[in-house]
Image 1 (tube, rainbow, N blue to C red):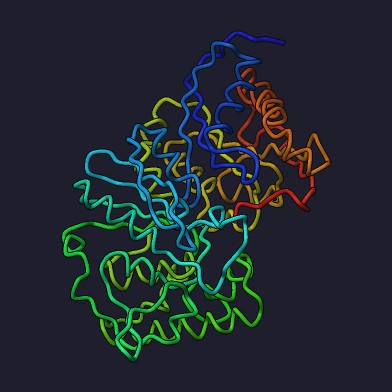
Image 2 (image 1 turned 45 degrees about the vertical axis):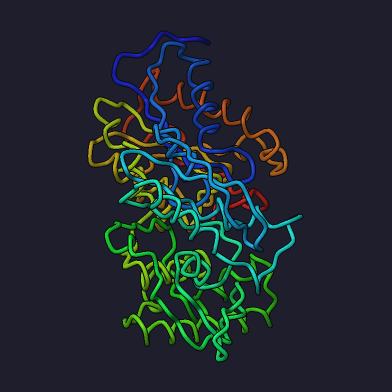
Length: 404
């Protein structure tokens, strides 16, 4: 039943992507369509959101940043067409644009040799464009090279014992003898580089870049040992040149260790990706006068509670007293966990479709149905603070792609 617009303010849609099915922009479009199927004149403001991983560039473009195309080296060296987003001398660089898993030729992983070199080229392109502030979004990487490729692209020389330049990739770091920063791009000293990521792993050990994320990039158990040893040597050599215990810092293991290189060589302080992106995309300004925020991501799970977009959005909305509900492909969190994170309730695709494959295939149409339910439950006759369905929890956990 179509209803007139309710009294009150606008609705803000600020969701991350549904990994494997919908981009953040597409999520916002489908949620808007579902809401307006019930309330055609409902005022809606959309802020596609990201936490530093894949989708960060698109979120910036949706917020009015200009796309600048760049040809860069892909993770295994082949040229790829990438882009940075630029506005007011601020550039958003998404690592996955040049060094992402999705760019591997024919999808074939190359865990030992994949490099972050192309990401360094994107940073250099931003500097060439006159940008003095660079937001580096980390996530979705194909490499486990500790950011060595990024350093090479920015002018650092990594040499073996004979004085020859090391080939790219993490495994080659076992042969590292000398780090020469003489030609490191001097513009980096004046630039502000901000690292946006959603992980707090160190560089090394059982919680490090190789052990935790290497297998996702095709690394065998033997490869993980090789890469962790190579990264340990890289960290030791780096400490001898720039000082500090950067390998132990939270976030050093982000994006195959690119976080480590950003801290050690670019002087970056790690920041919660969602906090950086909310500021950059103007999310907080949209809260004034809002009556409801709808956030979400593909999988609301335990990882969502640690720096992921929905929880960051909910925390910001709470400061303005705006209630928050979430949409998701699946929800693994209990009602208590959701409310503890500031989310009143979650509307999952698996609540109405038990087949995870169909949830992925038909995500848009299913999401519109869930959004229509939100309109009925929360906008036509607003509920008490606990919200409708707040005791519901459908435990369809398997096989819908997580956003980790």
